[in-house]
Image (cartoon, rainbow, N blue to C red; front, side):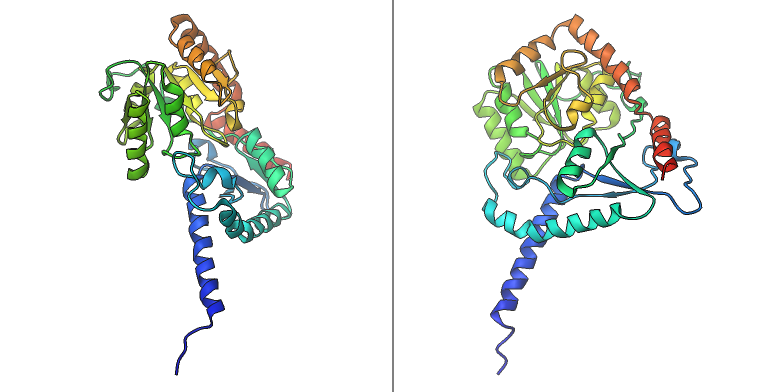
Length: 333
């Protein structure tokens, strides 16, 4: 009589499935973090045409799974999705496999590894124990022009009063729930761009109502609509955790809207507090409200916009500058 596979095999299958589910969850929630491996071929590097598009990069992107369990595995309101101890145990093998893979890549001859910000580079060192350079992404400037074109809509959405814009799929790691908490009592509404799970969005709408904060979840927007939405906002804000780089401050600088961001992660590479925007402590609600008041002042907005646009040039985020940095990296391999 066939008694089926041993109990141990069934338990292993369940464990494997849970590991796969957790790993898939990490990939989906933290797709923006990456390591770039640059390899010079034996006949020498070739980067002809790389400046034509920010998507044309020599190298390969590897999504690291080594993220903070306490951040990625929480519901939109911060409550754990499952036992954090169980999550950590399920990810232990994945962590070891990931570390071995990245160290193996770094040991290849004529290779270098870069992160997309100084924060990412430091995290690569902490997690993998290897030295990494910095290769910031490139930005196509005409998607968020300084002045609105004739094709840009005058307004987007049905916001009846002043509002701020937050970009990123609704989640705890993106700080969506905390952004609503922060706006309570400010008189400002929130436009959320990036969507999310239907259940999470319903919870956010209920929570915003309880905080007396207006919330509009924007549908998919074109670049022109996004530029118009940002241009009409009091500020562009983010309370995201461990953001590797974050293009949103750059987009805000481009259209001249104040950038108010949490003083963490890759935001420190682009925002200089009090110069081209504000970097603010996560839990200092009074400071956030003061910054939102600053963002309403016309002179402050103009000054931050001026220095914000200057910082884009200083950082060298054009496809051409990106190509030159990549040339320099490959040139020393």
